[in-house]
Length: 227
View 1 (cartoon, rainbow, N blue to C red):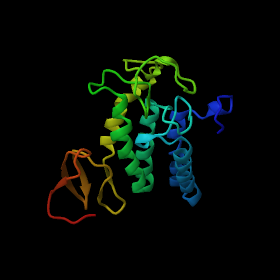
View 2 (cartoon, helix red, strand yellow):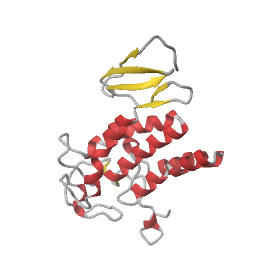
View 3 (cartoon, rainbow, N blue to C red):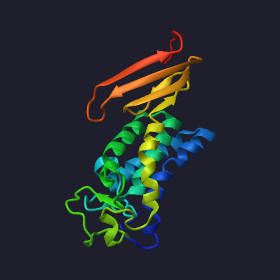
């Protein structure tokens, strides 16, 4: 995609592109083949090389716009990166996707939302030293896209912002194909699941990502072994 905003350049809409990265993994479930999986890694590598930003995100204000730290990333784009990584790790089991899930959830998502979740930015920047209505070199966003508010610019991010952390929590634990449980992403949690044909409760005690210490308390309904 050339760095211009002609009819060709504007096809590279960040949030849609970031979510579309999961399409090949769905196709691979229906018709397993190496090319589908290779295309996912190639796509992420290309985005990282040409549009990579701090915090595991890619530029998208609203269209992919290069690696300069002055470029922004739309909050909907952050949410869709999270959803895509959750899909990819579920479909393919590759821990690299879980790593990016954690990086974006704990770096890209919090910076663009106020702690009380009453205000957010439409786009965030890596070198965001000033929040204002000043002119910026964004692809198509207006001046107000950088400020914190209830709904600066389009309301799509107002609807999407509440999906990020619940989606993360929902995908912290997953069943594995060998009848076990996988701790896909870390954080304080408590999961009730079936493993080895019995009910199991696992409590995860941690301050992660603020502390690397993680304690897992495993309580099976009866003694059992499972992966």
